[in-house]
Length: 204
Ligand SMILES: [Cu+2]
Image (cartoon, rainbow, N blue to C red):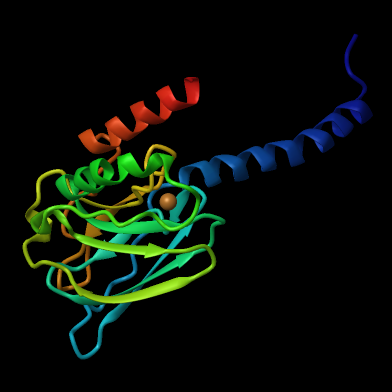
């Protein structure tokens, strides 16, 4: 039986908003690529550039930290979580060294991490912040940083935190303020290890 004209109009009347919604959804899906990075003015010793890193239980914001090799930054680490966190800034060997150094503290009572240390050349930058506090440290990014194989990261090595996702990559930016190269990605060995440990911890 043919559809009466009135019914067809009504059907189209319903269909049109649905199609429009679909079009908006597809447009949104196409627009989810990485956003353009605003150009950075590198910091100097006289005028350090402020870099804010927020630690939460258990992640960091922003999801990518931009740094210019050789610039001086004022790193402000804000702990918005309920437990003590740290921001270790450095390449994979630095992250691995702190992960190993802090692992034995897993059975320590709650509170700030007991004193731990690593070899000076693997120390990187480490800022420990208790819940609700903020620590500011002026620091000069090593000029050769962008040449480190595997990239740099900001990570937390209080036992279990890295495995729970407390690591974000550093993106190096040139002195012209534009990104230098591709980001260290989640395919790095260090991140793979973290993911694996996270999974096995979760399945226990
Ligand atoms: Cu942490």
